[in-house]
Image (cartoon, helix red, strand yellow):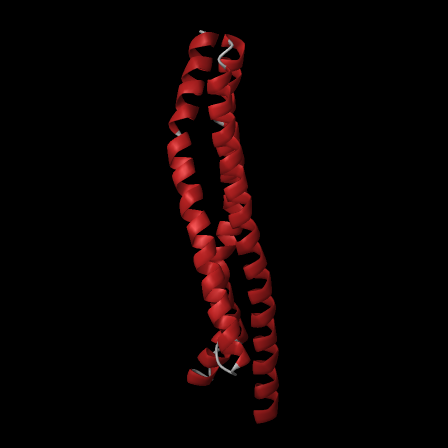
Amino acid sequence: MSQLVELTMYQISQLFLLPTLALITALFLYAFWVLGEFAVLAWRRRSGNGRFLLNHFRSQPTLSDDQLDLLAHKALENPRIASRVTPMLGLVATMIPMGPALKSLSDGNLAEVSHNLTIAFAAVILALIAASITYWVVNVRRRWLAEEILEIQALRGAHA
C-alpha cells in the first residue's frame, strides 16, 4: 500500500514539470516586459510625465487617500506577485527532476542524471533572474508611488 502511495505521488509530481517550466518561461519573459515598461516610465518621469497617481488625482481630484492607495497597489500587483511566485516555481522545477536524476544515478545512467540536473539548474536560474528583475522594479516603483502620494498631499494642503 505504501509503495502505491509513493509511486502515485511520484507520478503526479512528474506531471507538473512541463507546466512549471512553461510558467517559468512566461514569467521570465514577463520580467523583461516589466523591465521595459519600467525603463519607459523612468524616461517619462525624467521629462516630467509618467506620474501614475498624480495623473489620476489631476483627472479626479476627489479621490481619497484610500482610493489612491488602492490604485498604487493595483499598479504593482502583477509584478509583485511575479516576484514572489517565480522563486517558488524555480524550487519546484528544481525538485521535480531530482527524483528521476537520483533514480538514474542508482541505475548508473549518468547521461540521464546530467540531463535532469541540467533542467533543474536552468529552471532555477531563469526563475531567480526573473524574480530579481521584478523585485527590483516593484521596489523602485513603490518608492515612486510613495513620492507621488506625498506630492498629492502637498497639493491638497496648498488648496486647503
